[in-house]
Length: 267
Image (cartoon, rainbow, N blue to C red; front, side, top):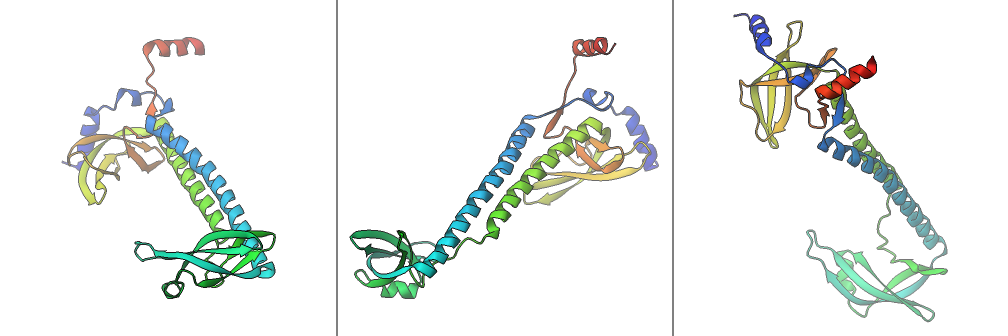
């Protein structure tokens, strides 16, 4: 039998879910997962702005402090109190020390290389450079450490904001597909294994008889090959399709009482 004739026979016996038989656009609401993702998108967007501002202030402050230390700093000698190495891989080497300014004593620690660590025994001296107006702001020459680049805050903010926009875009896509999409029967043709589960490949017919391929997943428990599913596709862009039900939106099921009230109201 011609595949198109077979699909036509199949379409005549197949019925979509009741909520998809209503005239478009359908009434749509967010599912529980959709509401959670909408809140997450808002948190990511606002959090990205806040994180970007906080990181930019820190990066700017640290950069200005480093410039002041290099231009106005005073040199003194600190004394090593103790030293230790972490069990990280690779290992990290730390030195704790004290230094004084007039009658004040300050205590801090710094990460150093292994060669310097071997030489900085407890009681040995090490150079320290501090700000006259703020002695706690200091560096150990040769072990200043890197500064946060000024472009990192913008990258963090843009990354979080982009993630939020992608989530909002997916919610919008599913909302539009459920409101405007056409239902059609889809035949599962094969599975494709991935490390996160199996991707389901399927075929479905358009009203013109054209057969379109689609896929969904990955899923841990995919429907069997040869099973028939319901899909929704955009009338003008059939490549935009998804298995029904959708994960982030639900169709509002109107009861007869509610429908009659709407009809009376429209009259």
